[in-house]
Every structure is written in structure tokens, then in C-alpha cells.
Image 1 (cartoon, helix red, strand yellow):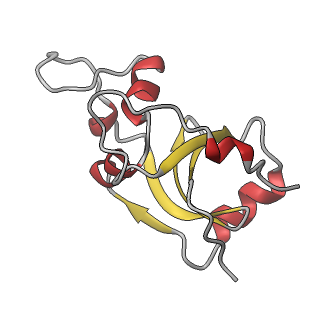
Image 2 (cartoon, rainbow, N blue to C red):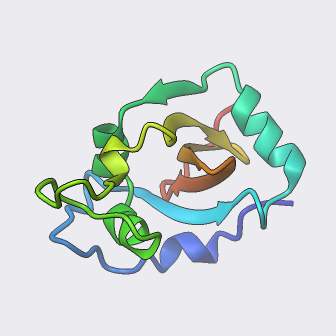
Length: 123
């Protein structure tokens, strides 16, 4: 089972003044819709690394829109309201999903995955 390549040719335009040259990772799936073996391989990949919130935000197209859709605030100054950047229950990673470089976050034990829209596969 591979990732459909036509999806990567039709990336929606960035929002919130995102710069597409830095943000070359697009949301593809969560573990709820994905194959469990692909998720396990991604989590256990030898190059899987923890990254910071800011790193993921810089590289993932639509990340802020995704956070807003989940009910998070995107900027400080909202009092005690939770933002995605200060929720210590959320973890951020860089790895490989189905052979493509990816960033993913784990939120409520669900992995949400953004993959590179470049056509580079690992060996």
C-alpha cells in the first residue's frame, strides 16, 4: 500500500502567510485511518527523533489551521487557555512514513502525520 502520488501534486495554497519553500510537509493521515504496520514502522524507524513544536510548525503546511480545528489557540495572551505549543500531552517527532520523510505529532494517543511532498524516498 503506497501513498497516492497525485495528492502531492495538488497541494493547497498555504494559509497564514506560510512560506511554501520552508513548509514542504503536507498532512496525509492519522493512525485511525492508516495501516497499523505503517504506523509501527514509523514509530520504530531508527531515524525517528523528537522535535520541538516550533520545528514542526515551520515545516508543516496547514499546521496552524489543523491546531485551530482541534480547538487550540495559536497565540499567547489567551489567559489560561491551552495552546498547542504549551500542551505537555502533545509530543512531536520526525521520522519516515511509507518511505517518505515525515513529521508527526502524538495527541491523545493518536498520531497525526505530515509527509514531505518531495519525491525523495529512503533506501
